[in-house]
Length: 356
Image (cartoon, rainbow, N blue to C red; front, side, top):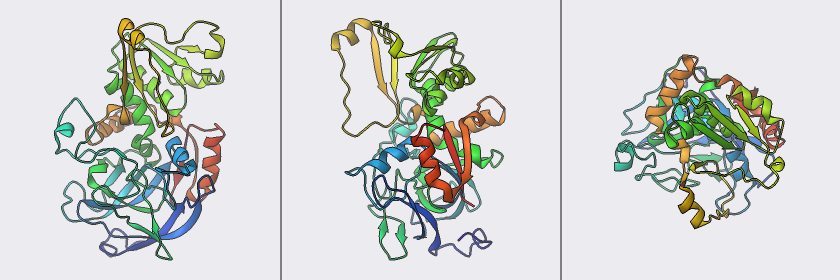
C-alpha cells in the first residue's frame, strides 16, 4: 500500500505490495486483489499511478479469449503517475517526477524516432505483448506467486506499475492528474490524427466517421488546426449535440443517405483505433487510383510522445485544448467494473478513476 515511505527512498529496490484490478477471464468482471510489483530493472521506472482512465482498447482485449488476449492480466494504458524509483541507465526522470506512460515507444535513438516522418520506433516496435519491451518477463505477481501479464507496456489498473523509459514522458506538475491521463492515449490520438497525421490546413474540410471519444478528439484537433467544415458521420443522431461541443459543424447519418455514398470525392483517410485482430479492409484499386484517394494507418495519431504530449498539456493549461469536456465520469478505482459497464453501454466518453 502507498505510504509516506514511498518517495523518501525506503521502497527503492524492494518489491511493493499494492492493489490492482486483475482480468482473470475474458469478459468477466475484474477482481481487485493485492499484487507484488517488482523493482525496476535497467532502463525501467516504477511509478505510482495517480489517475487512470478507461479506453475502449481495454474493453477490446478484455473480451478476447484467444491471443493476443491472455490471462491473468493487468489491463489499463491511459494514466498519469509519480516516479517512485528508477533502474540503472535511467537519466530522463527521477523520483518525484510527474509522468505519463504511453503504449507507443519513443526511444529517441533510432532513425525513426529521430525522423520527423515517423512516430513508429524501430528499436521497440509496437506489439500487443504480455511482457516488458526489452525482455520477455513480467514485473507483476499475485500473492500466490503467479505471473500476471502486462498490457501495452503500461498496465495502469494497478496502484504501482513498471514502465520502460522509452514509454514514459515527463510532464509539468501544473496540469491536473484527472486531465493529464487523457493525453496518454485516446484524446492525443484523435488530436494528433488531425494535427500530425492528416496535417489539416486552415480553411479545409474534415469528415470524421464515428463520434466516440477518439472521433470527437479528431474534431477537437481539426478545430485547433483551423478547419472550417468538420463533418461528423455517425448512425446515432444523439451524437449531434455532443459533436457540436467539439466543433462539429455538420452531421451525416449514413442510414439516411439513401443511395448516395458518404465517401464521395478525393482526400486523405486516416485510420485510427483498434479493430478485431482478424478484421479486413476491402478497397477498389481503380477507385483509389482514379479518385486520388489516400489511406494512412496511424498509431497514436502520428504523435511523438516525448515532444508532442508536453505541447498538448501546455495548450490545455493555456485554455486552447478542451480536455474537460471529455471527462463524463470520475470515480474511485475500486468502482472499475462500473466504469466498464458505462463504456460498454455507451454512456460515457472517458471515465477517470482515482487510485487513492
